[in-house]
Length: 403
Length: 92
Image (cartoon, each protein chain N blue to C red):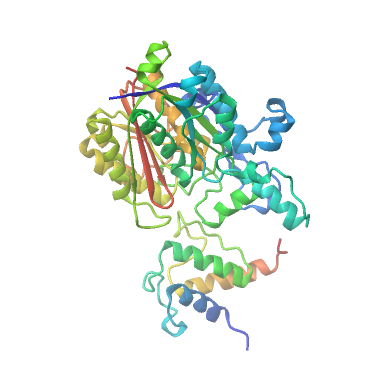
């Protein structure tokens, strides 16, 4: 059977503007969440987020690119360049035709919507920039990656709220494994920290005003983040034939839907996704050493996720480690699974488990080893990454140490 | 005749519960009325809009104590308290 390996990774998020900086922050348990800097922030009741700061798009992109790249596309291009540079691939001829890009984003060009609504509704203008539509569309980032790197195979975007990236990466994995592609650029991006983007989340009353404390008894909600992570998934023989460095192997994926509630998670739906991913990977539950949790820091998610893990893993649930790095980079919504995959790869490659920071009080309903506050050295051979979206759409990936 | 605070609150809760206002008594709990966590968030939004007040409510800790939702009567009391506290401030 065709196998799938990861040969490149890139990111920009609140913890760092590349992979080494992000992993260093995760190792140190550093928090990237802070006061939001955005227009009309004083009209928000939630004023914190995992925002990318010290970022100057003018220094990275030319005028024409900026007129076409929403912030979520900019983040994608930055992460994709790092990943493709690391993979050392160029695409021409048959390889170009057999390679594509599938990226997750929940909101797409949220800043572009926001700015142009302001312009026509608030400022009363009757004319907008000609590129508003190509800039805001959800597939803009995937398309620009395909154009920049000459990827001519299957390319599309996936929007499943907070599971978008995991669904995207799972589909990229299946495409390669099933013979539909040789190389897939995959991951996700989100740039929802605009006035409208935060205001919408505020309405739901699930946001914390002070910190994201997953699994901690005193948790009081989620904190939004922004950024992107992009990976190069490659057919294993292809990667080995060219002597590429293999970061990890993708071995399993499963998706389920709760078919129950538009916002409340389901233990059964989550557990079925976990069990399905293990079966797809042909791994026993006892072989999993670490889970990167969905771990949003809401009352509902964390207890349902812990119950699902306990159910899916049985006794082994007490032996494995599970942490939520959202405590550090915030919840990147459609981009979150991608940034979290970096922590999974770090666990496999470097033997460092990223912590759940902000952990203050044990919660009997989340009685697992959540790697509280301090990163841990541990040798793990296989890991899981959970994503459970609003709408009851669940997507779980399984990675194994590079063969 | 202007509606009282309690009449308005009862009307909002009754609409959420799909009941007649006459079926909602002051000692009912939201649970008695079949209002779940989403229904509660919607009711609080409707109360904020109706009275032009800010209700301190986080769905992650509904019993946190800033706003007592243990019964219809407690919600009415809390709304009256917020109206008098917030009417003295300038609205933004």
